[in-house]
Image (tube, rainbow, N blue to C red; front, side):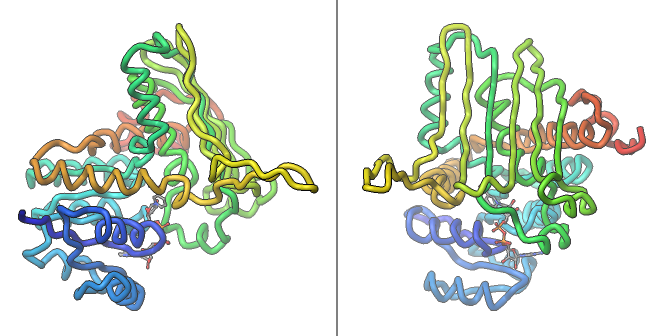
Length: 349
Ligand SMILES: NC(=O)c1ccc[n+]([C@@H]2O[C@H](COP(=O)([O-])OP(=O)(O)OC[C@H]3O[C@@H](n4cnc5c(N)ncnc54)[C@H](O)[C@@H]3O)[C@@H](O)[C@H]2O)c1
């Protein structure tokens, strides 16, 4: 059986995990190379995973004829350009979220993908999580009737260091974190978000405001067919990595997510102890494997990926609207922002 050759761009926490998963869990794929501006890091990962090629830049990796697909896991700021370069080189692409940090770059990336006739999958791995995919099957089977209310919570355990805000390599909270919930909000409700209203805070860490970021955000949603929703994102809850979602419909509700890393409770003389999930790599361990396996299957069969570039664009449009609402302190219609994006300045409309 011919194996697909795969290269991974960016081997920090996420890219290294993708590389490990390809090496260990994707029999139809062959990890050929990794690339990272921190070339020592690339070399180290190549050594650990027993592959021969580590590059300091993407262009050199793209020149390899034995690479059919690339996984892009560089910081957010580089995704759109990396997608364009990979498409121009004729590679199939799995890119981490977000698709881009603004709508013009997102559209340029999607145009490049269309022009090259390649496939693009976006890394919304929650769709592959056993809990979320089981919920979706039940929603599709009509078990909760018509979805009416969407609620989602995404809390990180520890706030990023201030240097990560200073570098501006990643998008602000709505682009880097809440984007997963914006995707779930469309996918699970099977409807488009038409309007958002964001409430935000920099309480506990006011210095992040100067970098255009926030510590926590609550985004209220209105949907095209009349449903409503609410998403909370928070960078520093201290107790664990907490991702939960609930959809209430006309015939019942579905809850997804749990605090516990393992479904066990320890009863001790000091009380009850449960181990909480503390990191995305543990909470979504299975989802990352299933995501890259499905990507490779889609590519082998020349099939449109399950999570497309358009899904990346729609989630980004919601993030842009949420940021606009945050900046203007008023509700923002999702479509209007997309229309304004070509020339308007959403900070000073
Ligand atoms: N889907 C998810 O659950 C999930 C989780 C975490 C991160 N991510 C996304 O993955 C991406 C990487 O996040 P991370 O947590 O691994 O970050 P990280 O900081 O741990 O790693 C980023 C890596 O990219 C490298 N890099 C920086 N600029 C580069 C460039 N121009 N070209 C190539 N490599 C470059 C860095 O040297 C570093 O090794 C981000 O876009 C992030 O949003 C997704």
